[in-house]
Image 1 (cartoon, rainbow, N blue to C red):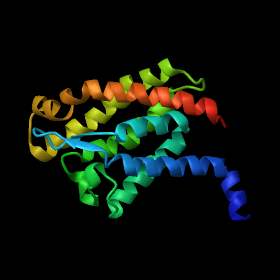
Image 2 (image 1 turned 30 degrees about the vertical axis):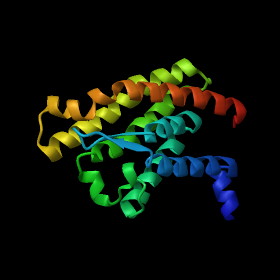
Image 3 (image 1 turned 135 degrees about the vertical axis):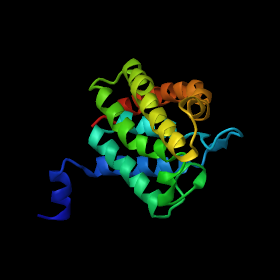
Length: 185
C-alpha cells in the first residue's frame, strides 16, 4: 500500500489533511495575538476563535489531531503557545490547564456541532460546552500551581473572560458556517 493509499484509506484526503494543516498553522499564529492582563497569568487571545473554528470545520477526530499537534509543537520547543511561549513545562504552569483542556473541549464541540451547518447549534456547542471545559482546565491548573482558592482562580481565569469568549465563540460560529458553505466535503 502506497502512502497516498494509506492516507485515503484512513479517511484523510489531501483536502482534509490540508484543512487540518491550515488549522494547526492558524492556531500557532493566533496564539501571538494576545493581550496580557495585570491581575492574572491568563491572557485575552485570538487562539480561542481559531480553536472553535477548527471544531466547526473539522470532524471530532481531526479536531483532536489538530489540538494534539499544536500541543506537541509547543511542548517540543516551538513558540506556539499563547504570547509566543514555549516548552513542555507550560503544560504544568498556571495556564497549562487551558492548553490541556483545549484537547478535550474542542473535539467535543466538534462532535456536538451536528451534521447540519447551523450557526445557532455551533454557537451553543461552543458556549455551553467548549467554554466551560476550557475554564475548568484553567481553574484547576491555577488552583494547583498558584495555590489559590476556587474563587480566586475564577477571578483570574474565568470572570474577566466570559463576555469576550462568548463573542469569540459567536464569531467562530459565523465564520464556520460561511466556510462550510464554501467548502463542504
